[in-house]
Image 1 (cartoon, helix red, strand yellow):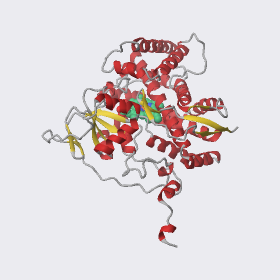
Image 2 (cartoon, protein in one colour; image 1 turned 180 degrees about the vertical axis):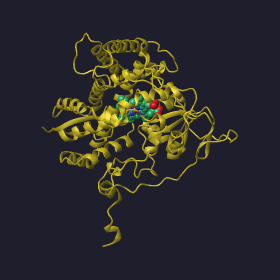
Image 3 (cartoon, helix red, strand yellow; image 1 turned 120 degrees about the vertical axis):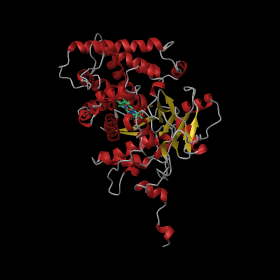
Image 4 (tube, helix red, strand yellow; image 1 turned 30 degrees about the horizontal axis):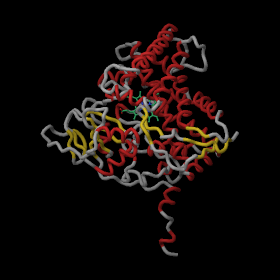
Length: 480
Ligand code: HEM
């Protein structure tokens, strides 16, 4: 037998066991002296309109095409921003930003269209000491122990949803995942459970938010946002939409304040009502409203789309899907479920990049960017680097398993769907818990099939990337 004949073909081997992780070459990164000569990276000469359209209609492709064409650091120009962004996909560049002193590279989420919805007090929009104060107040309800209390509730909500799926039916998974994650947020964060009377402010808020979230998924909505970009106050049809949501949430806050703090509830809202900062100060009503809306908006669509993508990938990767179902149905799926979620979030990160504004000149490898520049850490670019992930376009949960099949945690600066540093996603533990429960339930109780074998491409919706057809699936079989 020849050596060639004895060796299994590489793609086959890599599907069955974790591939050897490739090594990336280190690259210098971080703040530099003000007299260091500026050296800007290349970027597309296409108009801002064309770059914006490319990003909105196919975000993964636009990032991967740019990095293939211009290298690991490149210039991006979007209509939503007057000045360019400089994007990077190198782990060392990303580390330099995530570990920077907060004042050296503050976030610029306040430039996002979400600002009009979330207001001035949202943890997502704030920078500096105010951001740290809000983050400290919000963190405790999102710690592991606190989240563990919600697992049974998440299981209940998921089982109710999956139970409604009919064998033989075909539908988009994303809206169904969104129904689950919105319900989880309503129950876990706001303590709004079940169908309370129409007259309660909770019920009114719940129906209003569902209605407006539905409107925000329509394609024309993005034009509304674009028309409002750069505005400090919402204008046009966005104004009454946002106003109605704010006033209905204000009514919920008023009613909950009236109940007092010792209600015995354990939802995040109650914990926030009771929270005090280092000076003993509680959150004001405006702060509460902005934070609650932040948790609802940042927390449910991201998780829902992430799940829809993982299913979209599984349906088109039968080996991984078969293994997942076999292991889950045998009761041994814990590590494989974890690896599958990580692989879904690697190959289809729902947030494409996180942005900061450097306050000092900054080195990204051979380039030096001036102070005051917007930098975009490309999650898509990083997650598709062949020197970080072997065969990066393939869906291989095995890459997160060791030889014994145990889950291996990815690197802090090489797997970043939740961002990093002092702005790492506050809800990451909750999002992971939800994804575990939902994926397990789906793997256990239904067989999904893609009605169209072609992969779905991404499109931008609000701030997340969603499968273009919402992750369409046919329920080929429903198990009891
Ligand atoms: C798969 C689901 C999710 C993904 C992929 C995700 C992703 C992210 C990312 C990338 C950031 C960082 C933004 C930046 O650096 O500027 C972030 C921040 C944040 N996320 Fe998530 N998120 C998810 C779920 C959730 C959930 C469930 C919640 C809460 C219920 C949540 C609440 C937040 C908040 C409050 C921040 C702001 C943190 C800060 O600025 O300090 N997210 N998320």
